[in-house]
Image 1 (cartoon, helix red, strand yellow):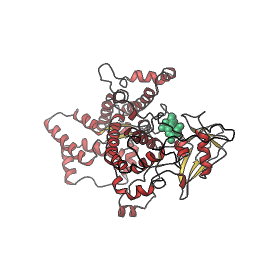
Image 2: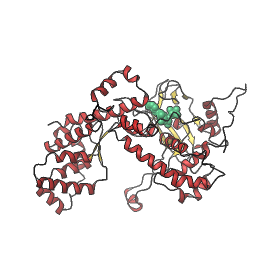
Image 3: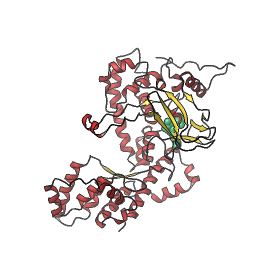
Image 4: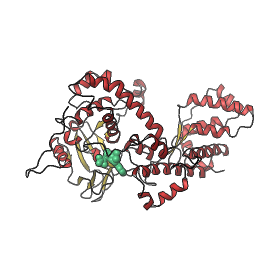
Length: 465
Ligand SMILES: C[S@@+](CC[C@H](N)C(=O)[O-])C[C@H]1O[C@@H](n2cnc3c(N)ncnc32)[C@H](O)[C@@H]1O
């Protein structure tokens, strides 16, 4: 397999830095960078990032990337093989063709994308929780939803590599070698795709077309050189636009000279940022932060009001029906302004609080008539403004379910786990010096836990009877 080629030299004989090499490549592939921005490792929040060299107005294009410079299954050197063997490369993630392309291009000294991929000579900087030990994840992130998500990811990655990738690369020894293209490298490239790739949005279809064709599968991920040099904040100032010939990074609010240019990776809660990108936004600054309440905690809360065998039987029947209606492991998502899954929560509360007679009638009618006008009312009722005005029985269930969820961070654990002690977390978040003394994993875990617990505590206050 190909090995590291020597770095290109400039006229005086000194070696180009990886960044200079990449910028020269950008010129060669006709990627146009505005003179008002530059890529830098200084003055940014994390390693490489983009800075404004001048004031930039809303609507200005910061750079334009021709589609031929994108790296994906249709542009890689091995695209014909990937296309021919498409059927055998299908997997639930849909990422295998891009990952095979990256396994090949990343280790080929002849790769067209070498100056781009050489920006990351190893992936040591990637510190997603999937690279932490299981013990560390469970200790620092208990209750946040991340340990479960990572366990699922790791099982899927292992399965995808063993069942799809390994048999395929073994069949093509001229292109890959299992000693080089190991599961370990595959895992690093999965993390690279998680944190650096882009997905082109689906073209909008009108409702009728959608009904005829059913829902389309999401577009596969692709690597977008230069766009992936930008860091993220929820209060971003730039956004990637897709046109038929090129992709453009466009300024979405004025950026002052010297400020960092921030893209958005989507509306991401801190737990999603840590899971997919390995970082978090500091407490309070992530306007997209959320906390989940598992549906099972609403059920547990409902069981606490049971006074007789007939109550128990009614609740069991209601729960059985809800389980059929809702997805397994369903959870209600609360953001900073209220519930984001309000119609689902409304349904569940309505069912769990029905009398025997109401439930029988509900079953006879096979549910409610759909009332579209209700949607707006429901979203208002489950906003922070509306929650205190909900019926006492509904508030009681939400309050208790939120309390049970807060406990799942470990408050009731013997010896208090790292995430369990709310007062300790609060003291750390409020003390910049103490916070800075923690290693980055513990800082990130704290940001996720504390942000979620704050949302749940606010919810408990809003639903206090
Ligand atoms: C698309 S890359 C951005 C370029 C990256 N800084 C680099 O040097 O390669 C995404 C990665 O940048 C880092 N990152 C992005 N936004 C960040 C932020 N607001 N705070 C800390 N790290 C961030 C994370 O490591 C993330 O996985």
